[in-house]
Length: 275
Figure 1: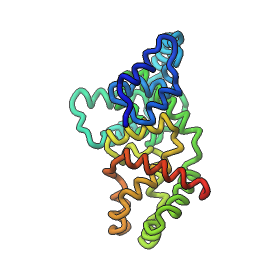
Figure 2: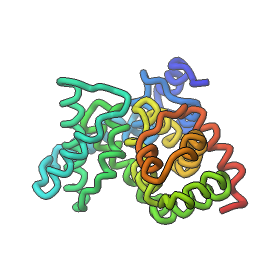
Figure 3: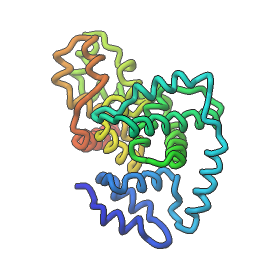
Figure 4: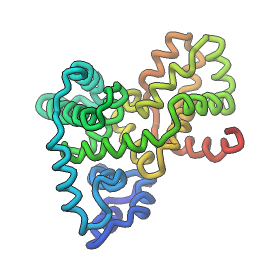
């Protein structure tokens, strides 16, 4: 059961500091939308746990962000295309609200690649959209995206995580794995976008937000198990499909993400001897 807003406020409103361990403990049960932005910024390190350091850190972040150029000729077209494509599933943002969302995301993505002096990748757009749905201030969104990218850099490479998923797939869903083999479905091709973008393009927006509550509180290590849990949830449908239909079906899933998370934890607890 999700902790109440009042329980969160007891932690968030401490006059001197925020107990981040207590906050993450609450967040494992889900984060109410009323406090999600505040909680995520703390868990990503954008906002310090010490109230005395808050204004100083905000000034440093704002100064850094304002100094960064928000244009990039080489990647502007691709960024615009990906942002347009990544309209949150299950929502219909329109008018000014959608324009503001798109503008914030494009500005932050451009500022980030300019700051890091790296090439843009489409997975960046997938990773930023859950953050953009929860975090309304552009400077804070930039800080949150930087924090998320640091976490992603510290994960195993995608190839290693794909191999882990394949091992879990064979062990836990042998019949479905055999069906994929029979239909000559390339598992890595299917799961790689899930791993790079943490399924933000493949689930409804509200489901993605619940997933990220878990990722930020427990750790992104749980994601491969979420992938296997999602496959198990739609196993019966997939076993009735042929190759091309399987790949199309996996592009967007409508699942009970809270149940997926419970099952993912079970897979984790029973998989340690397999990996």
